[in-house]
Amino acid sequence: RIGGSVVFICVFVCCFWVRWVEEDPKEIMWSVYECMERTCEKLRQLNVDVSNIKAVGVTNQRETTLVWDKETGEPLYNAIVWLDLRTQSTVEELINKNPGRSKNHLRQKTGLPISTYFSAVKLRWLLDNVDEVHEAVLSKRALFGTVDSWIIWCLTGGRSGGVHITDVSNASRTMLFNIHSLDWDPELCRYFDIPMEILPNVRSSSEIYGWMNSGSLSGVPISGCLGDQSAALVGQMCFDEGQPLMSHHGLLTTVAYKLGKDGPACYALEGSVAIAGAVIRWLKDNMGIVQSSSEIETLAAAAGTSYGCYFVPAFSGLYAPYWEPSARGIICGLTQFTNRSHLAFAALEAVCFQTREILDAMNQDSGVPLTQLRVDGGMTGNRLLMQLQADILCIPVVRPTMSETTALGAAMAAGAAEEVGVWDLGPGQLPHLTSEKYEPQINPEESEFRFARWKKAVQKAMNWETTEPCSHRNGMQPQTGLGCLHVFLVFLLVGAAAA
Image 1 (cartoon, rainbow, N blue to C red):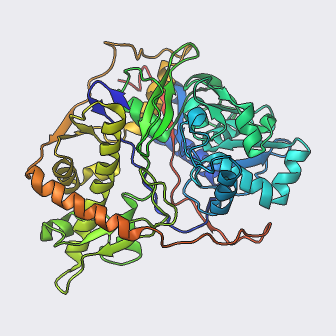
Image 2: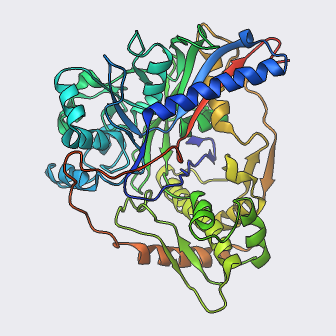
Image 3: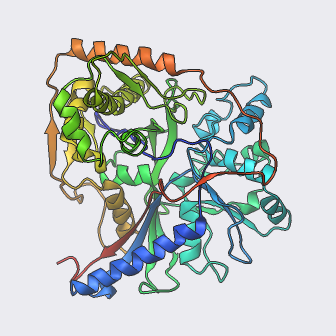
């Protein structure tokens, strides 16, 4: 996202690296309902009147794909998660059908390469491999959506009048959405052979979509909807307008947000990393190197160096800037002196090196030299990681005191919606966020040396995996669970609650 001379880089974090990754849509909704009721209960314990909740905002994983039956309200298959790799053969078939056999064949309209990452490819796989989905589409009972669409449809009544919508930030990650016309594109739908009638209505990121249908929040409007990375942009106060800029260095062009029906669409250049902070969970759960994620900082600090060890966590291939699904994880540079502290340090460096690769691509595409990096999320509490990031980038890293800017962004969008109008996101009206700044502490030569060694390690991680034969219909053994689910419901309170 280009705003003045500051660029906010979106880094995805997930805890799965298996080939098939699914989530139970019913379990998603159960967790949403439980979250809402427990929140309302907690507010009552704090003597906050629940009637002070004026709006609900939703932020979610963007590319995770669901299909459900609009007549029964039942999911027709588990949600296929954004980093799932089962569709690699589908991707190859789609690439081979275009004249130049280029993964960038659709980039001018979508801003995206043809990849396992995006929703249309997952939807195509469902249509080809799941009988229930295929039959429901033929009988015109099927609805498609990303997690936001499923949640909002259920919360507004489901089969009894539920609203089937998505916002521009989520729609722009499907590969069916024209980011210039801001609508579903018939040509793109024909390319993937997907019927347009199953797609949700596309709305802005900040408007009333419908009202809560049941529970403690019945009657409260749902007025904010943003994909998680876009919500973080709003929470970081990145409001300078952007224009679509096609990347020539492996980045994605995406719709950042559209705040209001009549508001302009703002665009972003984005670098997507499949496995960043989740490498810490891997060290804990798979390798037993630490007992809790919070230990990683102390362990890494004890070494103060990786001792020449480099870790490429390409557990599910590499995303930006490579878009190489054949890559797999690698740890290289090991010696007999390497210990678990060095591995912990190398894992933290891996997060920073991946961000550096995206930063370099963004500088080349945008022509705007980066002067600082704004960060947010749970990992920003790791002070060693923040200092390493500043050292590897050779620029300051700025961490807001309020680190959960994704939730903040969804609340801001919900509160700014017309007819809610709790606040104004116009110039001069934005709140001031306090922050902490980390300055580089090593010389640029050392930073460049370490980064060059990382790039060498990345090349060694390439071309490990080959395409597996496509599974037959319903012959599926997926990894399921809610372990990588990113859904935030943000309740906007005013009046007594704000006080």
